[in-house]
Image 1 (cartoon, helix red, strand yellow):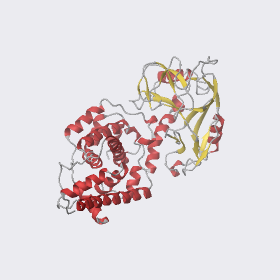
Image 2 (tube, helix red, strand yellow):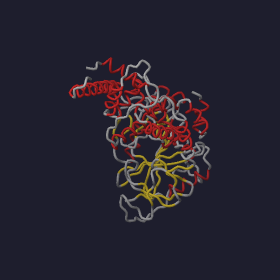
Image 3 (tube, one colour):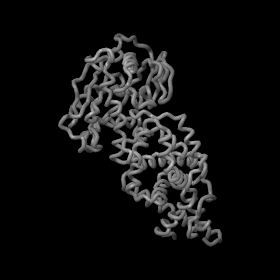
Image 4 (cartoon, one colour):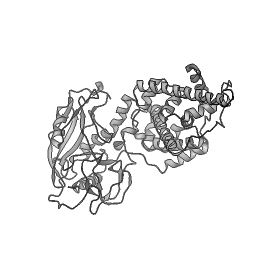
Length: 183
Length: 296
């Protein structure tokens, strides 16, 4: 972390802040996208989070913690957007239409659809934990740190999220079989 | 059945799909919005914004109150009468006016945040304040997180004050999160503060706010206390208020509070600024405090 840039940004230097965020923007945007599963919402959340990070940057006391702090801000804002989404809309079925597909062709269209539906049924906190674990690669203890929850809670939420996703896939498979189509 | 290793592998691959770059227009639009967003003064940042890691969050939370209290002793002495009690004495014998918790004659409710016009405002009893009270705001001040601030875009000059509601103290400000309850009066708070290990509480100064008795105390770290051993290692964590702000006192960052007994309980005010705050702004703050009228 460039301490000078952080300190300049904290003194109100917008260019310094933009320099800081530019190298982190792609990862933070992707994080929001994976949590919200919608390009438009991810873009809105990214913009809101960026403005909030700027507004509250003076709260960052240790420049070495910039990345953790920034990630926390973005995850929180995306969680808020995810909560709003759940209150406002019915479950949507959105298939990924952009970005690279998994390289080994492991996922079928049906898998993606089932994962999408299962994921959207999860509470936002469980969504965040899955994304932080499977997309960002954090172990549960680091997720706990990031979300400000006890490690045990992070572990149990991750376990429950896995179980819920597995149950969602299994339930969808049973429906397909009941309709006379192979799962 | 989808077994656990399978679901984890599926999720790994599924999350790898999707956009990996923020579109330029989205980034540029967000940067454009920064021009319309000022930065929050450190002294009013709230806990929910600061929750990073346990040590880190305490450290960054500290900045909120340390910033205000650290320079407060210097900045907030009455600008025209050094050596007297640090809070100005307001005009006595206020004439009680009919009011309720939600309306104060001749005053507007202070917004939580944002620019405000000069005039008479009030803060309502609630999570931030044990009493409804009004005051006169001169030009150039803004509302911020339930308090008032000037020069909020200039961390070198910013100055502000605001109410807080505190019901417990950390039993050991240097260590654990165990709390001790405190009684309901201003004296209870000051007495409880005096009991905290490592914290030095100055002699309470008897002052008046809006014609009512209040007590002002200065808080410092005891000379024998090594805050490097504390969590966070920068100061003493004194309380977490009802609205989620910590009070931390550092070795070179003393603090000052004013407490007074009111009908609704105990009104506590926290003050702060910077050593570099222009004296004229300090005088404005003094004048503003002298206009405080606590509603019955």
